Amino acid sequence: PLPERIQIKEVGPRDGLQNETEILSTEAKIEWINALSQTGLSYIEITSFVHPKWIPQLADALEVASAIRRKEGVTYAALVPNLKGLQRALQADVDEVAVFMSASEAHNKKNINKSIGDTYRVLNEVIEEAKEEQKSVRGYISTVFGCPYEGKVSVDDVLRICDRLFEMGIDECSLGDTIGVANPKQVQDVLTKLERYFPKHSLALHFHNTRGTALANVWAAMELGYERFDSALGGLGGCPYAKGASGNLATDDLLYMVQEMGYNTGIDELKLREAASLIQGHLNKELPSHQMSIVNRG
Ligand code: HMG
Ligand code: MG
Image (cartoon, rainbow, N blue to C red; front, side):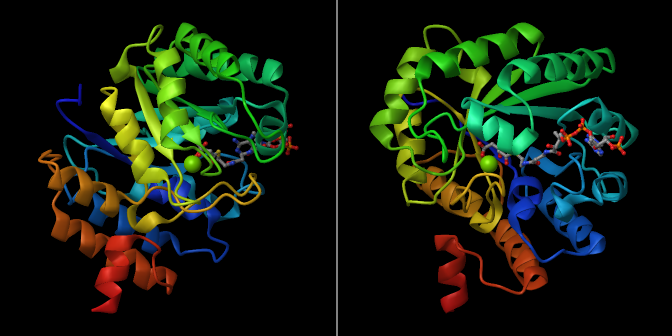
């Protein structure tokens, strides 16, 4: 059965911007996040507290997270790789922290410089400490549907990692199609296995639209009752440590689809478009979403 509601989690200021090589000013990021806060989105991943050498674009994470105007009812989250990152996230008093690892060894190593085995120890510390500070914790698993270095990824590996992360205390797990290779049938095969172990509302789907399959994948997950989806406004994004990774599923395209199906997400389409035009102006390039290409054509 289809889900009763759809929840959209905006990851543009983090997953969108991290792949942009031209460094955006801190003021522009703050202005954009403030605009996103006015759209009715209930969840915004605003930045990441990773090593600034690894993601130079987000080196100003603490300034951004400290300076944004928080809107009541919106959860402001940030990506955190280790205790050092968590310290800064706590200093900024974000509402939620997101830890991350990959389902494949090669991508995990390229992205966070550790084996999967060593990563558990680091994430366990972060989750424990974040919980002590009353923060909710989201866990990301990358390369769930395919790895740029290893190719096929086993569902059993995903299952095991997901289980381990929930055991450590995460509140929600987001399954990432990091390089946008998933197809709808595969999505249903994977989710059909996972639904035996995890409640549907505890999993989110994080699709990238590299090959144009993201919305079809959303529908495939919806058909099984999944309701939580990550997306980035305008279709910005990608992981710089996954060869060939590009645009996230676009929030504006996702909103159009689910609204037309009759879902009320609480997000204002016009305000969302304004926020998209704002970041498009700052980045000085056309955003890749379908909705923005309609706007840009006039
Ligand atoms: P490392 O070099 O192995 O770190 O990097 P280390 O622990 O050995 O420390 C080396 C130095 O870095 C030390 O400094 C640390 O203090 C410092 P020194 O003592 O030499 O002066 N350091 C830090 N500084 C600031 N902030 C920190 C931090 N940690 C250590 N947090 C590390 C390991 C994880 C830090 C690095 O590999 C890293 O930052 N990686 C992040 C890569 C990344 O952000 N990738 C993109 C996000 S994941 C993604 O996009 C996928 C997702 O969207 C889902 C999907 O689509 O699938 C989530
Ligand atoms: Mg991503």
